[in-house]
Amino acid sequence: MEDLVLEQLKYPIGHFVKPATINPLLVMDWIAHIEALPVNLGDLVIPLSKAQLDTPYRPGGWTVRQVVHHLADSHHHSYIRFKWALTEDRPVIKPYLEKEWALLFDAVSAPIDLSLKHLEAVHAKLVYLLKGLTEEDLMKTFIHPVGNSETTLKENIGRYAWHGNHHLAHIQSLLDRNTW
Image 1 (cartoon, rainbow, N blue to C red):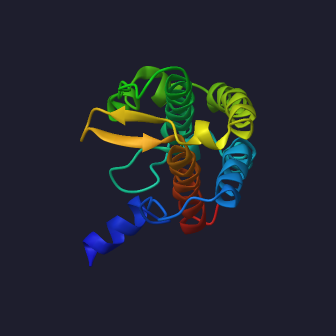
Image 2: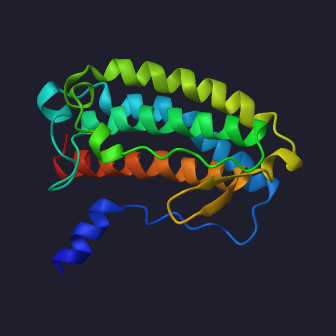
């Protein structure tokens, strides 16, 4: 039972599942989620106190502050991955050690406003780019060296829409549990 509770806290919206068919309507829906993330995140975290920002969203998990900084770091990487796939033939991307990044001084102590502004800028550029992609562009791929998996750009749009919603749900569930 304890494992089930922890799994629910880790994955409040479930794991990302690639749909069998990714049609243009679904891609546009995912882009809308990506576009809304900076505002939705700000609405959740700007009103929080320092103590609330420094509260882990689950036992053994990151603090809200670390989640905010992680989103900016991760989505910055995603933007670069889109650019690589659009300009290179099946590039092998460079992964980063997100858990270690979340332990760096800036992730544990920097004002969240820095990452909120960064995320707003990255998402504005990313959404502008994504809305201009052709079907041919959406079928371009990159390779993740862990597992040597190949990902299309259209799948990556879905993955990052899920990723933002996944972390929003972490924060929202913490707020709900604590009636903040």
